[in-house]
Image 1 (cartoon, rainbow, N blue to C red):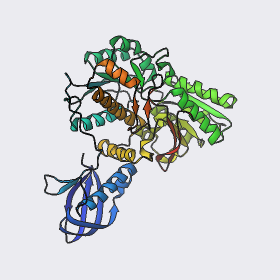
Image 2: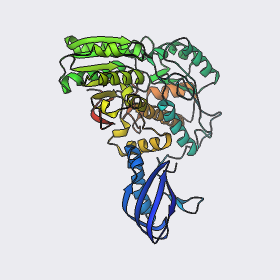
Image 3: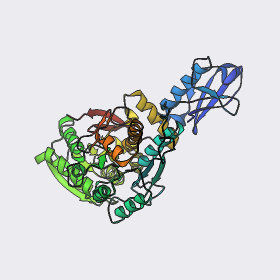
Image 4: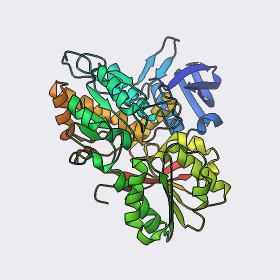
Length: 457
């Protein structure tokens, strides 16, 4: 993928422009011959439009630095484009695919709703975009087992009979592996059928009952997220231990995810719970639940991106300026968009699986910038986890030179993967592949990492 593309310039003394996927980067300076052959830019100035996207801006500016090196003969990544100029590539260096031949292509089928396949206003693009980004990279590097990886997704609502219907449609595609659902309720509804079909399922939900030895778990089912109850406990502890809240109001959806998180938080909070309200996963009018939070020191809110946006906006309208802790949904760009006014985000915290837009690992920061450049929004934990899932699958299949259901199942059972964009290390603990969480807070409209928690925290 080409982040930086030379477009115009004039000399020997003048200005040039680099267009980066719709964002303009300008400088003034001098150069010789042409804009990208002997160019020596000085005194760079960056457009206001670009700087509204800090993750992308860091990647573009880093790319310009590489471009400057390249024109003096120091860059290995520069190559001619069909306009006669040169192109600087700032992208993940994907190892060339291993040379072996599978009988058929690996097919990943996602039981995940997104805006392209669903009318559900709660659906987000992050999950499938993360998977598709990894698939594109691997296919460009030679595919998997001598074939391009194939991908298809099905609208899969969080509740209702259509969940089983979505699974049946997915199984008709004869998938190598299933990814999703992203709802605990939906996942619990299909795990027994997944075991009957003997197809590995890597879901993005969090109910402890989905553990291998849990009521809804089995040897074919793995979670790419940490347990919901553990994340909720971290969020509740942070409100009391780090922020000093003495009285905490509880909000949440009445689906499995919300109820599980609320129960875990109440274990931690004990008599510090001052009020509690629950509501439907697609609720829009949350005036009364938020009014019930008056007099609280903080809010623990285990909802969806849309319900969280509604409670944050409603709290702002009511002048309720207290810490507001949510789950991973806080990290979605759709949540931020739903709130709208960034001033309302200042008291918002989230317990997320990871925060790729504010990570101290350089490769994660670079990946987040590439993702935003490609899709037009900053990646959440979910995009990173689905991206990582595809690369874990690649590692398993290439190591075994086999893509049988048993090979993939056993590969995830024994996985040790430390090259991810979300967790620092993926290992299987009773069906959950990660045991890490991050607490972040919105500052000046951006979600910033405050504290990381490992398996023993």
